[in-house]
Length: 212
Image 1: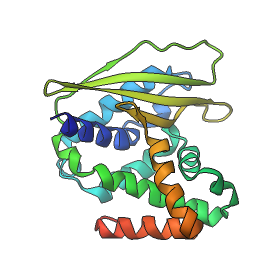
Image 2 (image 1 turned 60 degrees about the horizontal axis):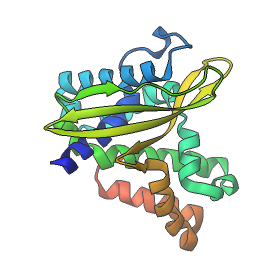
Image 3 (image 1 turned 90 degrees about the vertical axis):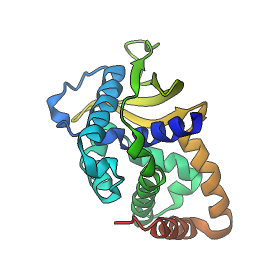
């Protein structure tokens, strides 16, 4: 039962950045915990109301991520951290490919669990941060079926045009997502290099039959 809730929660995390609400409708000084609660609540409503998403339509989920991910997530930082030092040696074209394949990998990995996302309860923990902090951790809890999963989000404050908080890592059940993939990617790159990692991710995504 706990593993089921964990997979459901991970699916919620993967597409939480795909909120259907227009991002510019919210103030740039929106508090990080308010942002996370809004995203989780919005995507939960999307899953409830959209049969195609609930049925695991990966093409639609990828389209949602493409439309909404950048206002809410620093996905370049997330991918770079997962790839590790090799990111700086990768060409711009390789970096773009890595981001695209990594995004598809995440969406594909948890698409099936979306069918179960219905009536979980979302609660937020108080944020322990000073007003001048540029990075914070926001903690939330997802409860359902008698089980509770704690989520930790790392967010950074971005200055200038489009300023606001952006997610760059997340932790479920004590495990940070970026660090988990960094270990897997390091093994691939140690023998195959960056192009080898891109090839492995591409083949894995094709094998899932859900690459767009």
